[in-house]
Length: 234
Image (cartoon, rainbow, N blue to C red; front, top):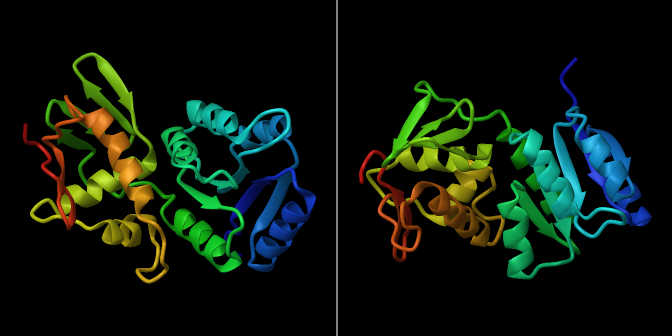
């Protein structure tokens, strides 16, 4: 029997929670729900779900806190945030805490299913023949998702490693935001998604791999095209 992906939906609004449950059961997923923050955190920390759909505005404990707690023990757990808060500061905060994606309410059902499928497709982690990736004075272990610079240990998420891997593989040229969305996130080229998700992840990566994130020498912007990674160079 093929594996049925298990979803945890943490959502306090009952009509949305019930609607999402019916939607994903219809699409062949096993679904469990939580209606508040503390219950959602307990279930999320069980480690038994292939993906967590996490509302931000929850009673008892908000989605930011839940994401932060989950990431403290599991950097690979796929998490998509559902939010009516679409200010850049909220989006940046969610992605900084390690969410794989965010979806603004009200959302398209088709787009939501697309994004869940895309994150699940990419959730197996990087396929790397070589465990180590050198980025200037930082050495990144793809398997443990950990970078080292001297005695400093720097945690990475699975998505961040996937971005670096893809850019490193295509280091001879600049890679567009749309290509990263297609190849790393798994989104269709014509799905009309915003590209600021890519920019936010790039900014996070620069804070981790660059000696001076304000003047990057490894992960550079090619104006009008996209990004290029000069792996192994200083």
